[in-house]
Image (cartoon, rainbow over all chains, first blue to last red; front, top):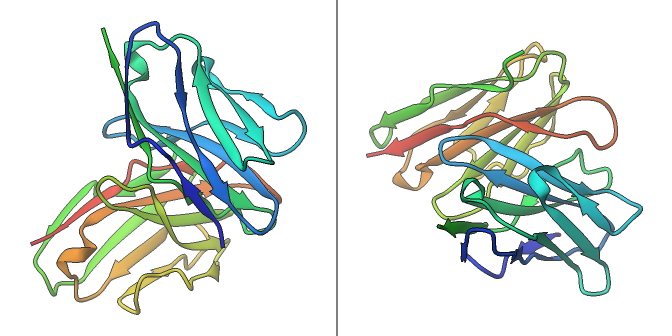
Length: 114
Length: 114
């Protein structure tokens, strides 16, 4: 069984400040890792993914995340946020060969203030 | 292609009634997934299809929930004898190919049971 913990339910930050959204997971097998973003009244959109290779992955809209196997973490970062980044962010895992079924964390609401 | 389409977008029903939701995946996507998202939580996997075959249904929440994909194209999710606890957003996603491929999500159907 897998689980995902997003340690912060809400993260307020001022525009142009850096931000880190934390994600920890547990799994007995190797996993793929993802971050999704959900804007109000819209579906989930993939921000970035880690499948293999370099542990630092870059995604859309200037976001990046680093896979740390020893700490079972996959934190999301952005060096300078914009008002338009205000949204709900979800970390998710999927184990190999599981038909791409995703296990999501509870989400972190990023609130960017002017 | 307009992406994954879900209908209706909103459904209000009385407790005890049956409801059915429809999902039209992206053309030629052979995998289709259903998730449920309750307020303030991340999406929770329910079931998935590869073509018309339902390969995982053990996560359906109770025997009141059922899903079909009769011709390997659109899918329906039915909830019988609805309860207030069924109130949630029901999300559909589709993906293509073998191995890992990105799943694209629809905007969801919001169910309110009164």
